[in-house]
Every structure is written in structure tokens, then in C-alpha cells.
Image 1 (tube, one colour):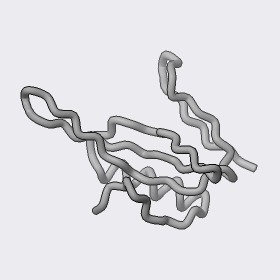
Image 2 (cartoon, helix red, strand yellow):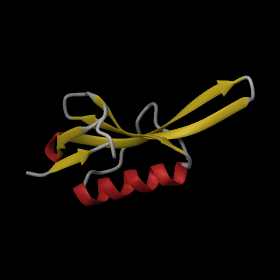
Image 3 (tube, helix red, strand yellow):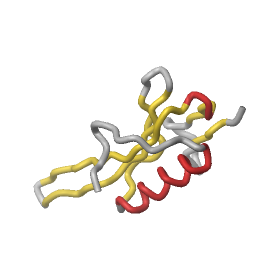
Length: 92
């Protein structure tokens, strides 16, 4: 049984996770749009859905959708998780 480990550094802070790979049901990308008085800024996030329905943010604040999708695809491919559409997933 393997684990997916997420660590923030160099100073440890919130957002660190250790998830058993058998608990992962799906990975997907979402977008966050931040509106300011100077315009909008869009960032992308990689989320995991567990077998019990919990959503866990693995990575946040990515600047490019293709980065987000690449990370999602590589983890799913490595863990042999079939890709499924999620309601809040960024549509390409």
C-alpha cells in the first residue's frame, strides 16, 4: 500500500497531507478567480476526492491550467486511477 505525501516548505505549515493511495478515488483541477480593484487573477488547484467523499486540496495557486492538468494526469496515470469528470472541474 502506497502513500501520496504533500509537503509545504521550506518552513512547515498547514496543507501537509499523507493520503493512502487506496483512499484516492479521483483527482481534478479547479480554478480560483480573485477579483481586485485592478482586475482579475486566475489560479488553478489540484484536488483529490477520497473514497469517502472528502475533498483535499493537494496544490493551490498554480498560474497555468496546463501545469495543473499535467500534475493531475501524471498522478492518475501512476496510480492507475481512471479519469472521470467532476462537477466543479475546470473544463478544457
